[in-house]
Length: 433
Image (tube, rainbow, N blue to C red):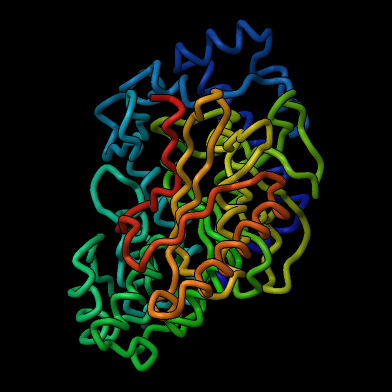
């Protein structure tokens, strides 16, 4: 279902004219109201008059996460503090948090973006949305909540945790749309099996999953175990939270809400803009944000962008499922590795569960040592030792082939690796300790 055809199906010429007008207004606002940006633009030798076309955005400097931390809490505010209706912050546990401040109009735009996101997964006012994202300073819970309210759906604000109750509510209240992290969706499926809940006999039919990297194979497993359609969604606290981009029924990339956000793909080393089809770092500019608007924010997410009409009828640009992040990329003995690459390879191996932990350490010779802990299906631990040895050798061989490095494989029993109701912790890097 397309929620807002006016903007989701807009022709390219009209969209570009709209984006340019909004981009010009943004730069003028930043230059006149935000001291940080005035200094930044002056230092770069550019100003509002230098923006004559969309391509001219490449002349302007980037904004990075440290800029947000350095200006904490309200150094990027582009309106009066009395106009702020709501504040959210990053979910990071270290360092100064990044702040996203919303005016009433910002919240309305957030609602709009999430209404489109939920509609992309087939949600209507007749659905019951079970929201397992955390409420509070984290943007996930309230983002989904606002979107569900916008489309008129019944929303169950479960937040995260208490999985037994989640399953009970899902069954008793006939939830049809599930919103959570993908790792928690699989955890719910696992708990459902053990508790004797037949999830596939419930009314649940689709889900919106995001807030952490996940693979196509993980999607297939969620769909198989829960009996639903699983849709990828994208957002980040710095920009607005969820509602930036979303999958439609075609599941062929995530549609960007281009009337609200201007996307770019750049070379992460040089900062040079890249054309459609080339993998690079995703950069966003907020086109209508009033509270804390951002110019060319480097997300550190690695993806590909494409333009053109989709079979669903939308004409907005699409970003590929994220390949990883430039700042969580692991450099192991000179080889660049993303945890998502390990997950993608691991889920293809029969006998393993989609729960793993990468432990990095320094060996006696100061060389990197990598241990990949992998949960094995319960039946294999009741089998003979030879089966486990065969599986360990297979995982080691696949990882060597896929990643180009040798990993130490440690097979562990089911539920050995700590579960999380939020973002799954996949890496423990002891090299920094």
